[in-house]
Length: 346
Image (cartoon, rainbow, N blue to C red; front, side, top):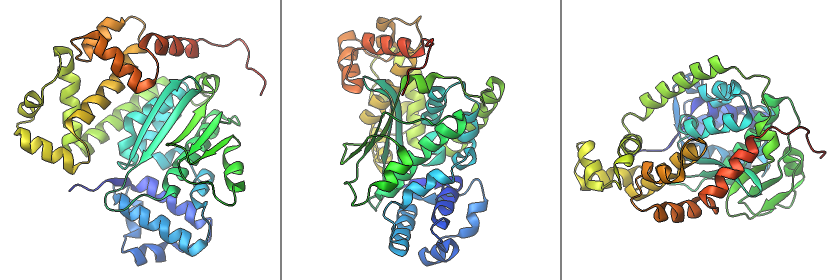
């Protein structure tokens, strides 16, 4: 079974966060049987389960149950591999987060990330997976704290979320969370997420550079293609994007395109922690967001581009994905992208 991995860049960020507690990270790596020198190799990868063991050992040694929040104090674009520089050159934070979602697997395969506009604002939602070990809460909390710190670092403004959702139970001491997020906290939530004001997400970034953004997109795309080339999940997504406009995709057609039997395709996807139906649903959802962001594409065209023979099936699927109709979603995207004359007082 293929292990989910984390980039050396992200692992280095974790190490810096642990060193803030005075922990001896080289010794911890030796205890866990990990290669500390691999942190200097930008193409090195660490198993997600090993990062879980690292967090567990760090809490045991430090006694700090909110240790993941330290990541906010060390985050820089380099923590996100080449993806960080693509974010840095984006026009807005919203555009940057869209890039982050697109290239997330470069940073860590263990994390599923979505960024979408809802009734409460823009939601950056995170789910962390493990292979044999259940990920600790510190991994997700570190990611949330990092994402917010990056917002503040890139924008040069003290951005505060409208709300922070944390899956973990409320700890005895919530002061570290208040200090890290400066926002209403919801513990025991259904998922981990940051909810942002659309205005904050749409203001131009001082680091924006369209030419550099395109260059970093190319580098990130090439890395992802090289890294994902042997992964069936990546190849299935590529084929789905190509054949969806031809109608409802069949598992048999997909297997033939990949030169695999249907049984082998199913087994390989299971080994990578997913299924044909899950990938089909995820790919359609991601493409739906892209199509509805283009004013010239009608809802009927979008339904057919996503392979829905019956538009009503598209509308039902869309409500399941986003809890709104396609028309309502498009209106929200349009409203969010309309420049505001003034910034409301906070």
